[in-house]
Length: 307
Image (cartoon, rainbow, N blue to C red; front, side, top):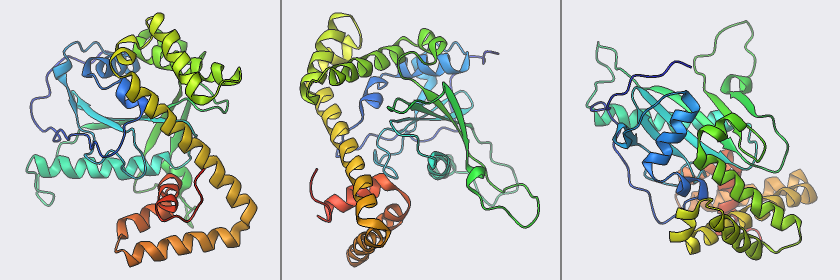
């Protein structure tokens, strides 16, 4: 693959936004918090050889829970604007979320650099790349491409859609995408750590014991040892929270099947009514469009019993 010429992105950058610590990060995001590791992952994916971490500018949106997605990482390298996301479920709406996320990023880009959206001259935009790293329990191929256009209702006659968003979904479970794992040690370590936890669970351990045992084993083997050495408690809390969220999602899916469509619609109707009463219009949109956000709001308003 052709390598990009190294250069520092000195202007036309999006503003670097701080992470909102009111919300806990995911382990994947924490694992690639160091720009050197993130740059290494970028190089592994693109066949490039950037070495200077300062060539990378993090542009992740300020709210760490944007559209219910807690672990988005966005950054600029050279002339590319990259969105990396980690998922344990194959959601078909990833391209739609990506489109909305990119729109917000480009809006910030235009405003930050003082461009005139209605000016005569064309605004130069960094090229968008969207990659999702999947490590769920269902078997998936090494790589899947999802396109926003697949969701469009067919027009009356053949025509090209006005917008498109493509997401490259990479399976990072143990045994998948071996060449990529060989090129990016950090990604391999992450996959090994998660795989160790799952093996412990299969062997009958409870989640907390499974995580602690995996942390001990991996730290001894030099797998994520720097992260586990300095953030052990934080990593444990993250993983327990993620596990609890997965259980809650499974619970909601089961509940939806059991209570039936009519009662499910009643539950959503009640949630929307309360959100409107509290003047939370943005959350109304999220509740209608995003299952993870809807789950969070159900629990916030006490509409579902704790799992």
